Length: 477
Image (cartoon, rainbow, N blue to C red):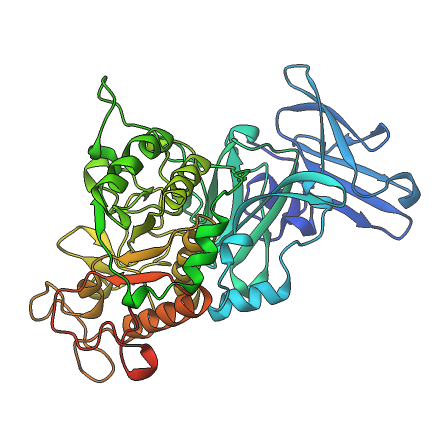
C-alpha cells in the first residue's frame, strides 16, 4: 500500500501495527488551543466522535481525526462510524481510558510474589468510568507490539494494540462493549526480528473446544453450596485421617452411548455416587487443565487456568466439585508444573523468544516427552505457576494438588546422557531453582489453605520430600 508522504512516523507505525506505545498516538490529547482525537478505524467510510462531531480521514489511510475545544468532548466518549458495508456502529474509544493495573500489582508480579496474578492478567469483565467492557493483560517483555485479536475485530492485529507497562513486560487494554463468550488471542510482534506470533492467553479461564485454539472471555456466575465442607476442611487434621483416593480420567471413565464424552454435570451425577458407594474419601482427577491432544490424558497442558472444554464450561466443572463436597468427597487435581507442549499457539516462544522455557535445550527441553521445561529462575514464570495453584484451590475449591513428574523436575540430568545437561552452580545434578520453587509453593499453599493436600509423584531416593521446608524438606503433604 502506498501512503501519503506527509504521514508522521507515529502514524505510519500505527498503520503498520508496529507502534510500541499506541496510546501516545491514539485517543484524546491536549493541544495549545483545545484537544484532538485520533482513531484507527479499518473498514470505515466515515466517522464522528461524541455528539456527532465530524472526524476527518487522513488521506490515503484509515486514520480519522477531530480537533476542537476540550469542552465539546467529555471523556469517556463514543466513536460512531459508518462501515464499508454501510452499517452504523458505535463504541467507546479504548484509547481514552487510563491504565488499569496498579503499580503495586506490577511490582508483586515482577518479584514473583503475586499469589493472585490471574486476577490482573488474562481477560476479565470490568466496569471503568461507568463503561462495561473487558480488561485484557499479558506478559510479553520482548514484544514490539501486542494486540488483542478476535471475532469482534476480524482478527485484525491493527485494531486493538495494547498499552505497554514499561520494564515490567506487561501489556494491557480495556476494550468496552465486549461480551462473555467472545473468542480472542494475542497477536505479538517480536521486537528483535518483527516476527508475528498468534497466541492463546496463558491466563485464560476458558478455552475453545479443540481443534480450535482460541481463548474465550469468561466470567463465573456459579453459586457454591459447599460452605460447610470448606469450613470443615480448614480444621480437619488430615495428617491423622485415613485417605482412600480414586484416581480417574474423566474422558475414559464412562462415555455416552454415541461414544462422546460425558459432561462435568453428567459425571457428577454418575461418578460421585459410585465413588461414595465404594467408600473412597477423595477423587484424584487426571489433568482437566486444557490440552490439545486427547491421548495425552491432559499431561501436556496449554491452559493452566482453564478446565478443559471437552466436558463443558468452567462453571460446569465447579458444579462437579461442589457435588463431590456435598457428598463428603474431596477433589485432588493432577497439576503439571514440570513441562508444557511445543504447540505454536501456546507458551512456547511466547513473545518470539524463550520466555516461559529455558533457551538452552540442555535445560529447556524434555527429550523423552518432546516438551519444554519451565524456566524456574524467572520470577514471572514462578509466579505464573504459583498463581495457577492458588486459582484451583480458591476459585474452583480444589482440595489439593498431585504434582506430576517431580522426579524429572529435581534432576538436571534426568533421562540425559553425559554432555546433554548442564550442572548447577555447584557442579551438581540437582535443579536448585526447582527445589527453591517447590519449597516456596508448598510453604505458601499450606499456610494459606489449611487442610489442602499437596502430593508429589516422586520415584527416586531424593531425601525428605514430605518434610516441611523449614526442616530442610521439600514441604509436600
